[in-house]
Image 1 (cartoon, rainbow, N blue to C red):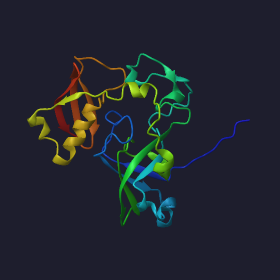
Image 2 (image 1 turned 90 degrees about the vertical axis):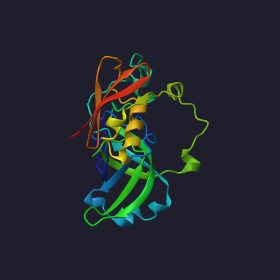
Image 3 (image 1 turned 120 degrees about the vertical axis):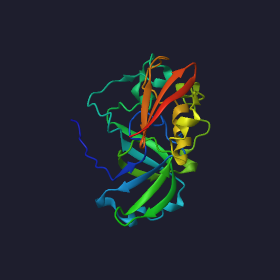
Image 4 (image 1 turned 180 degrees about the horizontal axis):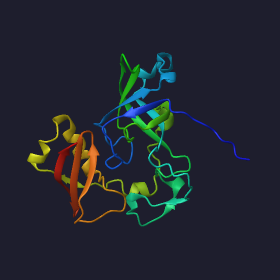
Length: 229
């Protein structure tokens, strides 16, 4: 007999990651991008957040809301392995999971009191798409959660992977100063769709009000256009 459980979002996160391409593949990578965590009304209670400002980092449990398939596939093809090797889904952080749940560690930058949205948490380093539902928030405890000697499988092998970003001054000036470093960081982490690697193909991703078009060749990612939506 299978027991079924229902969980409801306690909050949603809001940021400039408006499309799935361009989102950091792990939390903590996009350190400069700020996100707002806004609680749903039943949980918009300051007593539930009492003492949270004393912690520097938080764990978020959330849903891969754009990757809910309903079907179980025991293996996936991690992008960092070139999409050519299958490994077990439970040996990856793939979004295509039986329950579509994600786990991320973010930095708590500050706690803000607002008139219309209650108390809002401002965090950095999130790898969640805009409007993603959050099911729970827990404090990060360094003495229990940090494992500096951990072995990380294939992730250790591709730890240093990055691209060299190239963008002309003309295109860079189209992006507001506060967003330029964020866009460059996204480019360096290779925002291409999984398994795509064509020097002739033009790719793109959205970040806030911008749509960034680029090409990749010989480890260099070159921006060819910046458009304002």
